Length: 342
Image (cartoon, rainbow, N blue to C red; front, side, top):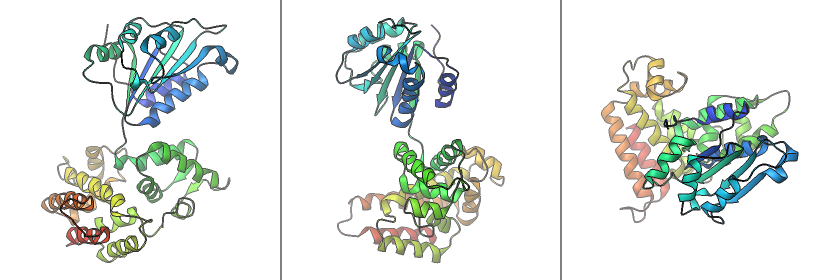
């Protein structure tokens, strides 16, 4: 048996939309959003509505054994071409021998979807994993890195024929974070609020619908730091200190760490004077996000960036109480910004 190639979310969705269904999908990983997207699409589209009552089964790993899952999968469809069996919380199935045997010879008339969330398949089950790799469509749903979130926002809105500028996408990503289910839910609310004759998300829309200040937010703070705008940076930090709900050390530390971590990588780009080269080196699809790193390399030395990364780690530890009995978060924010800009 040939080992299955690693598949992407987009490739799986293309096949599903073309009605090219596989006998078994094993979906695992830390990001539940993509797992839900695939399993929900199969549930809603693999069968006609009138076929679902008799041919679609939803099981929960905490309530069934591997043998019960296999029994359901081995049933023949009733008055339909296929049946669908979706196992949610598949990570809770303890004994997997029966499943392993089924994966080796699955029913062609069944689409079995295993939804294994909150982590990957146990690496100690080597034979089980090997069989899955060889016989199933295996998809690992990974958490998006913070610097990829604005691209996700742009893509998601674009698929719904809604435009968004980079600042607004960054504001949304910084405020909501990497929980994609929550992020898409907020984006859906924003889209509903847009008038039919103006399908564009702007900083003003984000401020009104999500509650992020268009002038005092993570995007503007990063921009001030990138450009070494000391006055603006302290304005924003002061605003955060007085309005903790608008932003805090816990929200902007990951943002700054991600930026400076990428900045040190940018210094090693084969051609760091070319935005396209830097963008490709950092894994961006367009050169636009690379402009901040071009500016950063002009305003900071590589040694300074390494020291900043160390300082961010120190402040992160202090914000969690390590070697810090009583310094408030606002003072820690100011200490970090002073270190970065001086």
